Length: 213
Image (cartoon, rainbow, N blue to C red; front, top):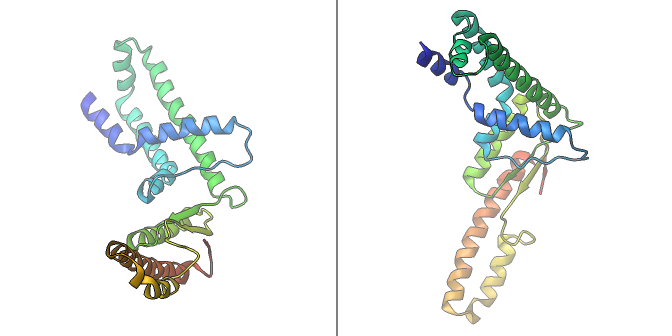
């Protein structure tokens, strides 16, 4: 019945709300005269889901076409009962909207995969989980055929100095610091040493093929 049909439709399109929102955004961008467009994307999982939308929509479109053939206008008839127009009009509107959305996102996907037009700048912080997520993101971007050769390491303490230099300063000045100041500096030094460790790992992983800053 209707409930089973709508459940099947919903399950076939994970993230459909995000997909529609993204397609509307891209319509606006295509009508604007900018040399560069920057997308500040969500964390890794959401970003990868966004990039997989063309595949999701292809699957969804095929599913809906299959359901259309199987149920023969059931959605259109139900909508018509509530003043949504004739069954054929409702069906045509539904399929037309999906076709329009698929076309827009496929154009965006094509642009994403053109290194002359698009590159992806990965941003991480010098901690284990963030470095791990960046590695996952880099591998997935490669699978999607999206150019990525820049990594920004953010939230670095005293980026112009390493832990050894700061340690030398602390050792030579700690006797003149108050107790609370020594404790704060000691904790800062521990964090700086941890950051340097993961920054080193980042350069080991990506230094040859990426521009790391």
